[in-house]
Image (tube, rainbow, N blue to C red; front, side, top):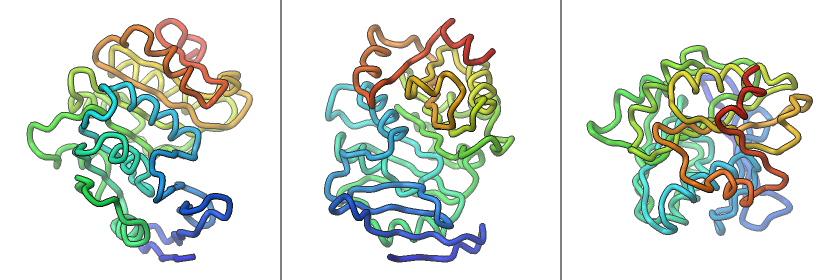
Length: 255
């Protein structure tokens, strides 16, 4: 196991082998698992919520075609590795608040050869103004929220509007929202995303939509309509059982 003390947040980050999967590693922060990486098979995405985001990425363009991606909250760069493996030549940017965490991850789990990844250190919202001029992204992934409390300057429609302005015409804003039973954060963020973008979907394990269990819901926003059959493809891609809510179906989620 390798570890590093992160001075900015005052926590310890560790990277240790997954005892159940060969060539896989787990990034933990103060003992809480944050990311899972299979360095030999980056197409394998172990965490359920990241697999669902990967499913949405798969539908952006024909298989193998490069995309542009922005990762807000880098973690162990699991999805950046997935995009490189499935869409070689993709141009990617990753933003992480703590330089020490990003350096630690890249030192312990280097990116595959040929990856076109530019890393940025700083606040996710501020970083939007520091990206290359004129760049637009096929997907922007926000993976920062981890419970009922969320940074107010990120958990709001203004931020989502700023992010949406950086999307390509058919691009997707994907937001991972981890929440407790009752789903107050999921509800508030779904409303905020609806205020910012014209087309919103919620994607997750079917039982979570009862609001009785903790878990992760993926909120997806687009400036343009969903392609025909898109929701059915996401449900079919799993993990199962899965549910995708769009349009008026979201009324039950937003109250």
